[in-house]
Image (cartoon, rainbow, N blue to C red; front, top):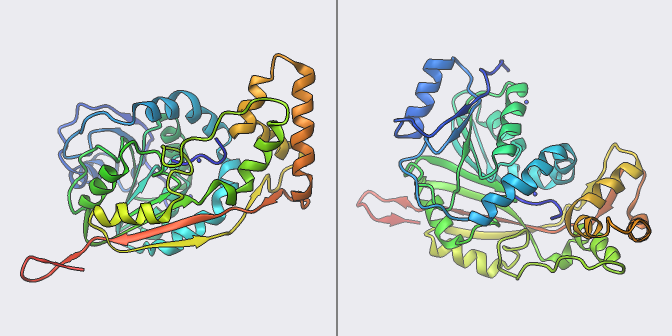
Length: 349
């Protein structure tokens, strides 16, 4: 799951939460059992019962952050964030080539927007599984999927880095800003590779360098004139810009066993606050990311708080076009596929 500045025909069955005490051994068995119990459509959150087995707990810090700190906040502003990210999401979804009948895993699915779109693309003969660490966001995703009436969609609480996913199961693994938070990306990519069918496709979007994304840096630099802002994470540390180095990421993908690895640069820009009043858009920017953290640090001093707000507002003024703040944004679309086994049992890339 990504962070935007700190990351809907039929009616579905009921939305619920499932515990860990299931004897279901595979994703296929789970889907069949859900169909038997609940009818044609399925929207649910399942906790670690959908896998061949459960790996060791990893990403502890990220798990806590996305459940206790950022997850609830993202649920509250999910529509705002989706409006900002939807342009990049459309490009990624088109590049994924998702088609009817496919089994798809959406890694770091967050509030479920891309998982719902993928489910619409694969249709009633396909299946989509949205995987995320954040239970608050998964609950929101399940509610959105139920309201949308999409078929064959399942939300899973777990970590793609360590969960032992069904081997050779998925036609497509997809992610929009959801894979940059792994403690061990090499292990995560190997795990995802092993869950994919021969010839399966991997497509994910990640931010390019921070310097190419003023939607984040401009508000933060304005706030930094008055208050201390959190330092950026180390270049390769888990976070929104962890996969900015295309050479490193393509090497990781190749080492994990993917072939035809590619990194395509996209610069679609972002529109923050579309359809909202200017002050509403400013308030959203001021509560998210480094600028938001700086403002929280300034809460004790009302005068300082107002100076920070004015500085951010003035710095953003040139980007307002009457329907949101329009700012440059740059991302990578990384892609690869699993080799196809030849008739002699070898690998034919």
